[in-house]
Image (cartoon, rainbow, N blue to C red; front, side):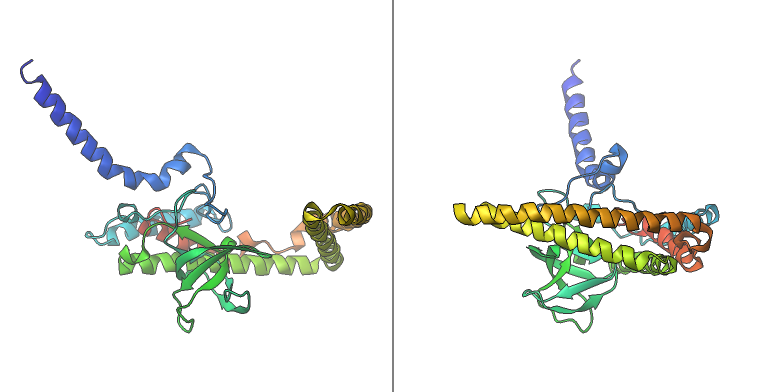
Length: 307
């Protein structure tokens, strides 16, 4: 018993040190293991960790087999002196955590702070996080884009076009940054090609234009009603009565618009089901399958950062 306390204290200290060092490595994967989606950041601009890492398109058995071999090779090629991103405090930003940077995962339009559209960037563009704004287009991320021919001044991009991470991307090695950009460049290409194929499929449907117009008309009416409702909440008594009368009329109109939309939507959906064999499918596209294999091979090279 004379050595009990020295041994106990030594084991306790050693265990604490091991947990302290290993915990950051496990953090990016905990939500996935627990099978839960983590909530978004302060303004709902951060993706849940449970977001799918790999799009379903192009996932054939042969593709996965090939990608697995490439992934094994990729791990062997990692530089022995590189630290995993988590040890630099880099992981997907969660609620109550302020992001330090981000990267676009698909083509993203960017705007000046006053809302003027400037152009667009593809997936795989790094940026420094500045803050979050709300607009008629939804949540917008204010950032400094790291892209040639774009001035290093604050710009706005949609939160839906990017992932936000903690820490500083400059702490990643050059190899890690290159692979990260390559991964999300491929993600953007897959998304763009998928959208193109789906548009081709929609164009074959004789009811698509009418369906699209009915949907747009309905959504415009609904948004106008929402704006009027917000105005009513701040209005004086007399003005509030007038707005409520208008809203009642709009509710009747909305029912008619929705009936029209439902009817054309049924025609659109029925034609699509009856001609399923004639419509191109993204998962059958050779280019998407190739990009998906390349993307899979990059995942182990950017642990905890591929979504």
